[in-house]
Amino acid sequence: MLPDDINEIDATVRGVLRDVLGLSEARVDSFRSETPLFGGLAELDSMAVAGMLTELEERLGILIEDDEVDGEMLETFGSLVRFAAAKANR
Amino acid sequence: MIDHYDWAGGREAMLRFGPGTGPVVIAAMPLFEEANRTRTFIVTILRALAGHGIASALPDLPGTGESLIETEYTAVKTWNIAFSSAAERLSADNRPIHVVAVRGGALIDATTPAASRWHFSPVAGDKLVRDMFRARLAAAKESGEAIAADTIDLPGPPIELAGNRLSRALLRELEHSVPSDGKPLRIVRLDTDTLPADRHVAGAPLWRRSEPGNDPELARLLADDIAAWIATCAG
Image (cartoon, rainbow over all chains, first blue to last red; front, side):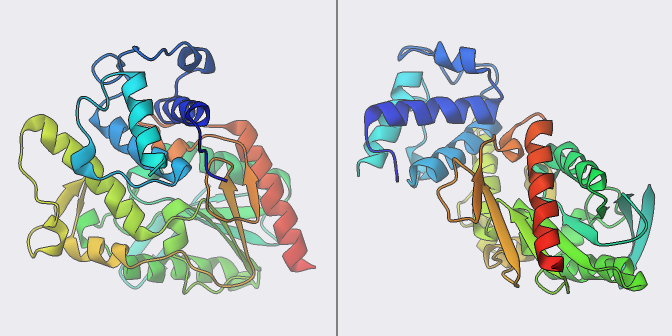
């Protein structure tokens, strides 16, 4: 079954960040909507972004085009969850 | 112990684990950067298999690891041939061969005769290419370099993707490569993976980590699964 509500997507995004970036459970649990990601999270460099997007695609059953990836989408934890939710509900 | 095997194009290194008799697992590593990220993990699985009394071998493929061949001169077909040569050498004493392949390793064992196959998170070649190309695009974006999305379909020199110089022919070949499906085959995936499998297990995709990691607990669990599977196939 694919996650279909925002809480599940929120949890999936946290899980992807934990697994791909090697962050602790406590650290990802502390992420709030306004927590900065790209530029704010040292572990998230451009290579890690690529792995994170692929992992999000696999876990949510979505397809992310490269031209959809921009600074705004990766700015905060909240913006990434909103992007993933919009994709998953399409 | 470090051993070697010969194939039509030269000689490659092969790590050996476990007893000198009985079944032998031949392991196919993930491809490219994913191999570096999972090598310790896979060696941990193979050592745990030795604890079950099962021997194993981890061959370097041409153009990877300690190989003297440049990565840009490799091809999926070459890897198939070399992997089969390694398996042939291991079966010289009439020992049954069992393939264990992780991720893109499942793309290179199609022509290898084996008593059974066991795949962990097998992945199609087009997904690997897409993944590497995405990382390349991200890096290009940062440095302000222009790179066309259809680059690999155009003729030209090898492309540097995720730290490897890869020929366009190899990338096109990969795009049409799918995991082998010779029976008997058992597929195990992570529980976060939505694709079908014989078993889903909890764990993190170590092949995505930018720093190589390990998960000894998952390695033990997978070794138990492989040992049980080999026992079933021998029965």
